[in-house]
Every structure is written in structure tokens, then in C-alpha cells.
Length: 319
Image (tube, rainbow, N blue to C red; front, side):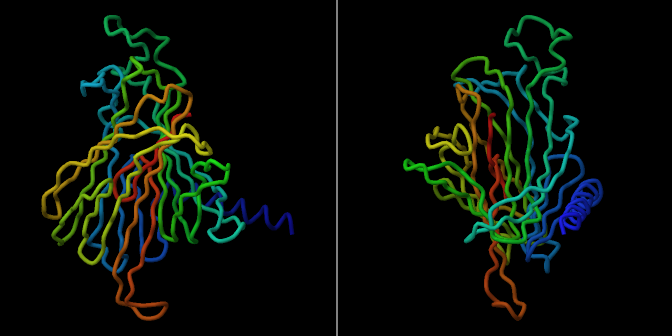
């Protein structure tokens, strides 16, 4: 039995790697997510019966900024898609909601080494050139995606004052995103990281975005995508303390299917080794099929850093 289990796990792991290098399409319930090549860009289809309508989400750029908003040019990545990211994939176990059982989900990690870019300088001395020693460091930026979620699951996100574990729920068909920074060196203690996430809806639909508090809702015509942004972050995923997070959701007016919306997450210097942010996204599509509660809205909850914004957006980690 043990050998059989190991064989099944090996086969499953092989499938994960094959999927990552091939189509990068994941379907669960009425929701489909497609990864676009080797880049931090995703397409989210809230209803697989209408493949012409989808949400495009792009992690576009990452910049260290000063209090007044000025960009620290030597600590910025203006295009994550062209930053030569590396990819890895593995199966991980997460808690099934309502029980202590574990289920497998696919974890895909995209990592960028900022110091390998000639425009990125580890030191904050703007007057000197970039020495050879600064072409390699421990600074990394990662987008972490959990996909292939076929059950309602829970990811740990902090503990309460009584040390009870708190969870982020992700429904069947959903996605969870993390954004991770390792060993980022801020030029001043008051500087922050600005992450831009671009969202646009494609298809023959009229988009009517609306903003309420920290939530952004985009009507996809027969479906909705709601991104819920927390206003706090944790030093670590199992911490009981929190830090305030600033987020800029711009004033949005009605547009057409090609109109883009940009979200800016302002992630402060954690003044410590780690920082973890976990907003969540809900995608719902109205279905008309029969059986299993046909005609009801099918909701897929997505946690994403992230990062953080978009349909299916982000969480942020410094560790």
C-alpha cells in the first residue's frame, strides 16, 4: 500500500511539472484559470460555458517609493514580465474546510532576482556604479499561486489573542496568490513597496466597476469578480500582531470590455525579517444548467496576494 501511495504521488508530481511546462490551464467547477506563458499574467474565466468573457490580471511593476511618492529608480522593476522569471511547481497539502483532512493543491512559484537586472542596485548609494558583487544577492521577489483547488480549503492566516489559528477560506474552483520578498533593503525606514496590478475585462460585455471601502467589484455580464483588500498585514503567517496596509483603488467610471483598471498596493517597510499580506477575491458566475442547484450563482473564492489586487489577487510576504 505504501509503495502504491508513493507511486501515485510520483505520478501526480509528474503531472504538475508537465502541466506547468505545457498548457498552464486549471479548471475547477465553473471557473477556469489560464497562466500566460512564463510571466505573472493570468486569465480568469468565471464561467466556462462562456469562454469569450474573462478577466485579465497582470502584475505589472514593482517599485520602492519614498513617502512623497517619488520612485527609487535603483530599487525598481518596471516590467515583471520581462524580468526573466524562473518557475517551479509542486504539490502541497492544505486543510479541507470543516475537517482535519488534508487535500492536495498545486503550488506554482515564479521568482525574479532583481539584482541580476542592470537597472537594480542593492546599495542605496545613487552616486556609484554597480559593482560585480551586486549582480548576485539573496534579494528575491516571488509570485506564488495555488491552483487546482477541487475542495473548499483553508490556509492559515495568523492567530488570535488566545493563540487560536485563523484561516483564509478558498472555495472549490478558487485560487490563492502570495507575493514574497526576501531580504529587501529599503533605502530609508519610511520607504515602501508599490505593487501595480492591472485588470481588464475582455469580451462582448459592458464593464461597470464599482468601489466600496476596500472592495472592488467588476460586473462581467452574467458574473462578477470582487476583490476584497484587507487593510492590515502580518509579520508572519502565524503571527498575532499586524501592520496597517495602504491601498489605492482609483476612482473608476464605466468603461468597455477593453478598459483597464490599475490597483496600487502600498506595502510598508516591515522593519523586520518578514511581512505577509493576504487579500481575497471572490468570483461568481450565474449558471443556467440543471442539477446540483442549477440556476444558482456559483461562487469561487480566491485568495490572492497579493499581492493583491485583481481578480484573483494577492498576498504579500516578506520573509
